[in-house]
Image (cartoon, rainbow, N blue to C red; front, side, top):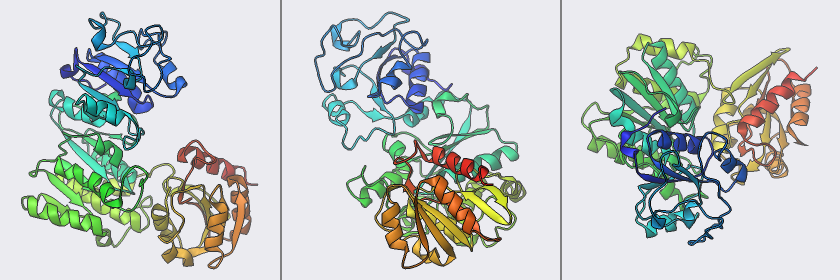
Length: 469
């Protein structure tokens, strides 16, 4: 795992114990820090209780928001209650809202914690305590790692594919590389790369919000469209979160920006003013005119991903031959325009990761004859971003909470079947499909009405396709 000697002996509160939170607890403890960890989910807290090998604290049951917990049920130690725990007693289960944070180094917040409305923001502010994330801890640990470079990739859509693509190109060129951040294993849980390695980080706006010193050698912005507006007071605030990645970056490092939409074009223009010649790169998707050599990188959205990946790899010193080899051998990611099967001339594609209309639109554009399965927990009440590609859709099959609303929107343009559940939609779409058609799951919605996450939804699609007779 990645740790830093600078954390030793310091006090940290960790809020949120999903994958990145657990990795953060492990890394801080391994470095010799004192950790007070909490998650509102009791099952998540249980993963680090005594008997799991992760700590010695036994008391939880604190009341959220209580600043003076009952000593019979509260955390085993607070900084105001005497000396810190003895060696081997470094982990405590305690809601940070109950703690006197005087003397703490930081509160480490998981990206899923909505800091715009969670009381931890105000509580930390009262003590002058920064809210940081695991990416900021990684940034602090960089000085102790073997010499390396970092690529940070953000944008509303395409982050995962571009992150995986850059990592693949580097590896096929013989460069040690790993990906982390909002994809795969948490970055702190991974082993440090050898000298000359490249860390490729997918960065959500939430992660950037909790990062202050990540100086990327190459920072990438793919696109910005309205999303996650429940976490921001306005679209402009969401744009500012993305732009921050460049503001905390040294101007002598490389910036790669698509410029294919108005917000990214504005940011690109600013970076062009600030950066030295050759240190900023426009990566327009329309510069990629032939994608036939890259079977897993079809469609206009992947043209933008390829343009960005090529610019990144050139900035890192790879040759055109090395880049082309990586593009042609890239296998694609699960749930992102993933070719699941072909039956009787009908292609079945799993694009479950498309959780908003903007991310679904490129999939509709990529296939000329589509049987479209969509629906779930809607993020918008329109499908305007998909409308330019309705001509590719032969029929639609709606599911989930948004099924009836989407059916009403689509019925003037195409035949629609309200199927309710995914299995029925797959069955009916497969029954209607003809050779040359693509049965496409590209929901334009979140999955949480019927599935744990988009991955579970994609797995269910695979299973439903596999069950077809």
